Length: 253
Image 1 (tube, rainbow, N blue to C red):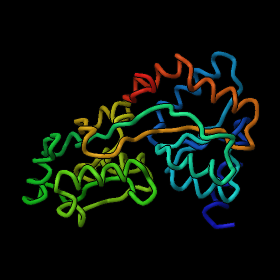
Image 2 (cartoon, rainbow, N blue to C red):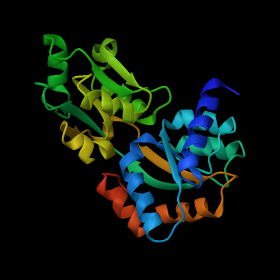
Image 3 (tube, rainbow, N blue to C red):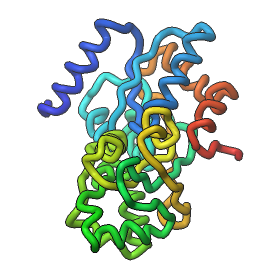
Image 4 (spheres, rainbow, N blue to C red):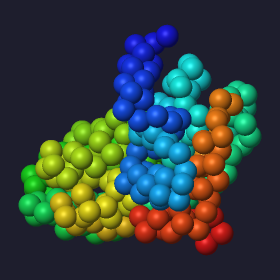
């Protein structure tokens, strides 16, 4: 068993000491939205569940190695299909949302967020921008979408030497909000949360700049009745309303 998996198991078990219930692997763009969904689920009588946030690609490897998760909410449906093909999921799962990306600039930075990143390009040339944050595109779907958008806009090569890569989209967002980077691209769902909305300005980038961020969830073979109930709740009108509030496009809309 790899060291990273051992660390994950330790963290999950440690968390379980304080909160009983099944462990749910969730893409980090869901941090604030899913926390609200969990509260709504428990308020209506559901038993506690433990969401653990990280990059979707890393979760797939951890689940394949035996990490103790019962449900997986991925930021890229391809990862769910991969688990299903390996026989680790109950079925191919269900699409629960489509995500969007934003260009975000902290309050104290003199860069204008625009959909074509014109001022980002100018700031890179005149010295206003020395660090630009995205999630690691090798295993984070939102990082991959950011790379695709930057490539489509013809600015990837310009920014590549200045990239600060987050382990997941939440960490990439933290780099920007804290001022460690002068700008960055991360999920709309994080940008609209109070924690980040107060930290700067953003503009939602056109969907045409990247492949759709189709987010799919699935129950794993070890799923308990509580996980099954929570899976069903994520499809409910109450949960959909929360996801919509955080900028997600929902199936059927």
